[in-house]
Length: 428
Image (cartoon, rainbow, N blue to C red; front, side, top):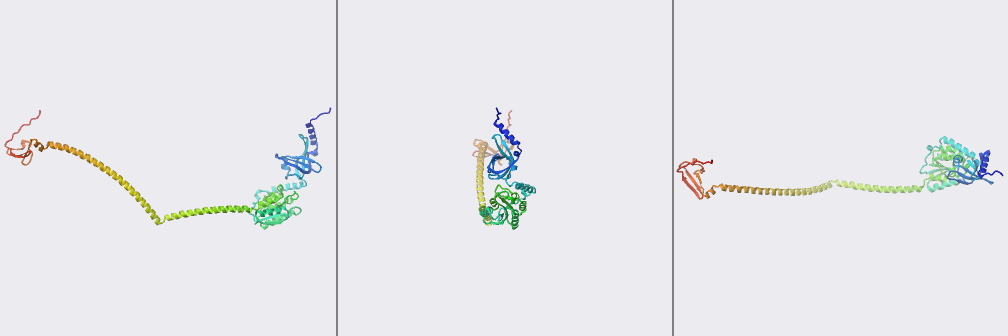
């Protein structure tokens, strides 16, 4: 019985055959792109076909960065360089692309890359040499073919955005023999004319159609131009040397017009906003000035002599009222204190009088108790000399002296006829 192989073994054997074939390990195949799919992983899956057959193909993301210089799409005529290998899992062979070029454009593309590297090394793409596009362009220069969609698009969009702009067209050749010198003359002429900005461009096409904008002469004319230049060559996916040298790249001529020409409606809208803000600010300023004027006038009026006198008089009246009120309060307080003091003095005097009266009564009692008159009324008498001197001892009188004896109801005059002295008896 013959040997039996698995499917994987068969596919692996076929892959080995493909790998041993030197022609399939590096091969260039031309054809038309169809079923082009950009996977989110970065890989591109497509079919390369001609009028007789088709070949499944793939370009991995790592090869895409170095081997594909344009946005590939269905219908492109290309030359794909790579290897044909077997995909064991599906049992299918496919072309693994390493490099993809537009058909017929391979040499031109190589020239494009070489010139790009050279100019880049010279610094012509450096950002520090880029000039800013004026915000308000009044005179716009255009270097393009006088017929075609590009000039119509620029004209329509420019006039729609700003009907007062001046458009100056230099009708240049943009394709074929003599196109590059024509574009250079257009840039130099408009630069000398003193326009505010220059748009250099044309509509889309193949790399051959756009090649004039890849010429070094055009690149140097744009770099040396004193007027800011906007490059607008082809469609959004097309890239030329002019795009790298220009001060600004626009994806399309229409976009270039939008970038160069300001929209007057936006200007008018900003003007209205600024006018409203100015009016609001002026109203606020006037109101503030009026308030300051009134405040200062009030201050001036308050500083007039008559106002000062009136104010001083009012203050004086207020002070007088406060003084009167305070004086009345002080008088009331002093009156109260005086009355309290008088009451206290009176009370003290009354107590003093009562004390003195009491003492007087005691003294009167004592006096009355010792009074001769009282003693006389009790049967006693009082003896004195004619001179009125009291006789208290027999030693003070002599026989023959005349005496006066006072009794209750009168005086008795007598004469001493004899003296008899008694001895005082002391306790003992």
